[in-house]
Image 1 (cartoon, helix red, strand yellow):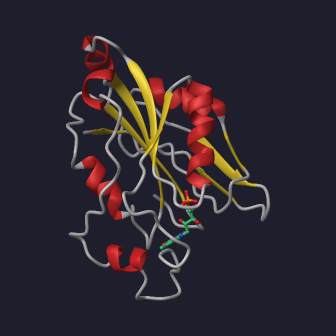
Image 2: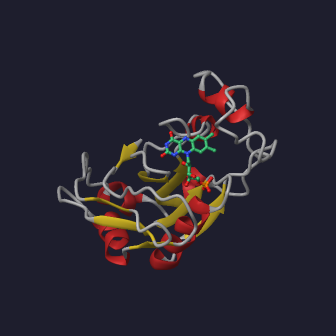
Length: 186
Ligand SMILES: Cc1cc2nc3c(=O)[nH]c(=O)nc-3n(C[C@H](O)[C@H](O)[C@H](O)COP(=O)(O)O)c2cc1C
């Protein structure tokens, strides 16, 4: 899997804005610095990232694909990541797809003030692999670039994201992760 980890930002509601130039730049970047920002308008929180910790030029791989398309795929339990994903898809003209859990998360499942709730139990178990609904996508053959979005749960990606990334071969795909959170970084 090729990762570009510069396009990151963390917000806690759905009133988000994301720099269009940052998204476009993330798609074409090679050995350069990505600058991006996502701001939350309600509480004026603003997080920006100006460092691409790893950049890999995948242009060759992209051109070898029969179709060099871009996909924005995300998991979102309460809609914040969904809003950012929609914006990225709109800016890039990418396809948009949601990772839907087979067992939807209820409000009680997401209550992180209770250590016994489902999300917290899953995050405490590195081997937990919640299932997602079958994908109506040919990820490996159709896409050369994937924006991969998720909320931060207890400082990490939700375990369903592990289920997802372990289900496909991303070796010919440039993967650009992005997250939303209360304050934690990616
Ligand atoms: C179970 C759980 C754990 C969370 N843990 C963190 C955390 O460690 N750090 C943080 O900044 N936000 C944390 N949050 C807040 C979410 O990351 C934040 O609300 C996110 O934007 C939700 O995205 P979504 O609406 O797409 O699901 C947590 C939320 C939940 C439900």
